[in-house]
Image (cartoon, rainbow, N blue to C red):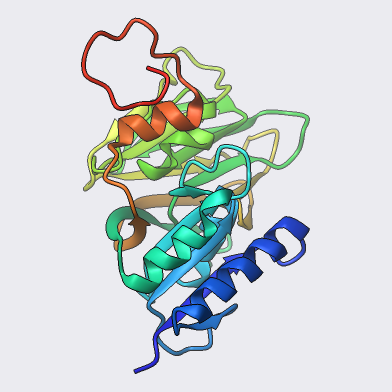
Length: 281
């Protein structure tokens, strides 16, 4: 049976095109059939060349395939990427030889109840963001947990994130960093005008409801992983819950999440007196 690996990269950025050619040749040299888009047939793995946005798009494009994604960072932080741009040959070789292990990341599913009684469904690996559509005026929302009202307030938006997304938009909004193995849902209000609008960490069996209030000065837009946008009118209700579906991220190193956090964010570790394998500690 022919082994098939998909290369996912930005189609127009010159550095991504060059990186894709390097990866393609390295995989072909290992006897692997290389694809640049899904064709409906099974694939063994995906090598993702780019930043976190590219990896999130690749996760959406290959959803349901079960193929692990190995990220090679061509961007800035590239938090989800396992390797850096100088490691493209190594990444291709690891995938071709099966020298990797996989880390499961939980996702969330979204149900949008529109005011006209229509229903839409969505899905995200990182986060679901309900944010104001207009620059002027606040977004008035009511937030509930497990079918019970929690609080209502004006804000710029509300982020509902997975642990994977805790280092992205939710982190920028003041939310906590959650280790990937923790099964939880984060709720992070953005610039909320309220006394009680702190980030929340919910259990995996809870579900979150965000209602866009009828009197809201601004209408809203729903953003899924920064890639898919849905207009949300006043009176809409968005429900977010943990999905049974997981995304598999390929790893070539057994370095703990703490080390990745320090390396990617450039955190200072001066003064640490315990054992450490982080460079520069």
